[in-house]
Amino acid sequence: MTSARENSHGNGAGLPRVPSIPLSDDVSTAADQSIGGLVKDATTHLSTLVRGEFELAKTELTGEVKKALTGSVSFIVALVLFLLALPFPLVALALGFNDMFDWEDHPWLGFLVLFGAAIVLILLIVFFGYRKFKRIRAPQRTIDSAKSTVAVLRNRGDDGHDALDRRHP
Image (cartoon, rainbow, N blue to C red):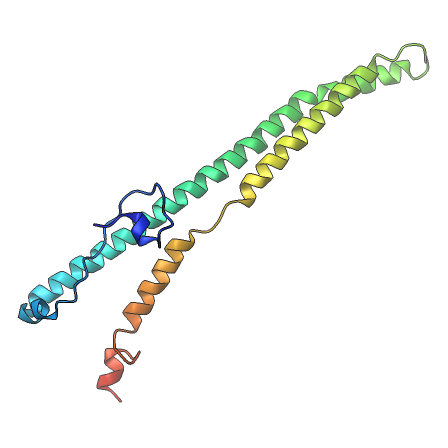
């Protein structure tokens, strides 16, 4: 088994170990095996490859889901703060209407200043949440690995043609 760091071109710091297929340049061992043994090995290697792809996808998506949850919590906190701050402008508006015709004291101004401060705080939290959502990325290593696996499985021959193409010119 190799680590995920080795499987991801040295870019997987802190990722768990994933299974890999042991590769060998020794052709003599493959020539000594029976067809059944070769099929068994191929099935085992394909199964290991598929499990490794799923493990890589799971590892990458877990990090992205955590970023999405952090951004979602920021938007929820902003919404709660907005709902908690909503009575202030309503009370200020009511007091403003009461004082509109009497210009001596304006206690509603304090409510409006408090509401303005709440809006600034809400906008800061929304900005933080937006930045978290903006940093979410597709699982690029999984996509690249899956594409290369498909390309290898499609082009099994040396000349880039499928084995079926060579039998039927």
